[in-house]
Length: 347
Image (cartoon, rainbow, N blue to C red; front, side):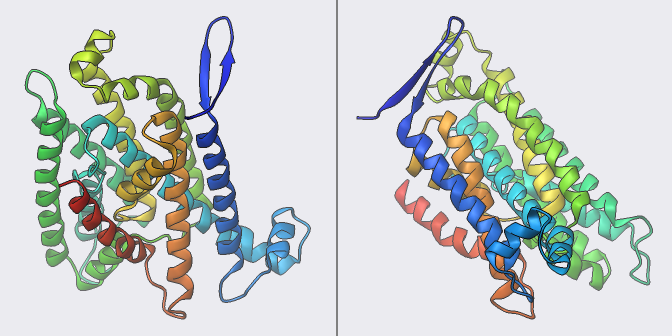
């Protein structure tokens, strides 16, 4: 039997699941430890207490430089990207009511990837030089993700939008944009095709505070919206008829949640590449820990997704040193077997 804390005031009341709260606190601690370890490990090893001292501004000057200018921004981008993708996957699985739904499965990350590769192809000259700043690529990726989300919603509309039409249209568009991305890579210069391949795999190599500052508003700007919509998303799990009977506009809610999902996934892909399977696995692991209520599922998914990408990036930097492997290789290596397991489990 689950135990709850009850918070009650004149205008509102909340039930807080004790087990879920403890689980989220443990995940938050694991997240912090993972980030500290990732910050300290590299070509130059920095002990955890020295990492903490450097973050407090009291450590060795060289350590402060390495941590604050190079490693910390990279770890923060990895964590925010993983958290955003996992949250996006949790939203889609709730909206579509399908445990195999995720941003990469319905074409949202595919649209972002196609736009980014199109940017590299169209704005490169014969000497492999970009005609515009590479800093515009994240903008193109985000526009691509948003365009695909609107396209999915528009094509799925027929006297409203049903979950089955959303996922079928999404899978079709995913295949289409994968083909278009491959075509763009073949048309472009070989050097740009290689660069696009690394980015499509998913990497946080070379990130700086500019990327962190650009991602934070998207991530934290979506959280209040999710908090407002979380109860109604729980009700949607009981079906459209019951949801409408509760006075909720199903199609408006789905559209708003799809836009939040797109904002989170688009910003993550724009700055960290198309990390595969994070949006699928993160919510599934979280659901096993916290249950199906989205009030606990969302924070747990975000923390698990962040931990996954931070550890994947750490593995990519250290296991094959001096060669650096994109973090997306490791998330895919974990995600592919887990995806097969889910397919057999849900037969």
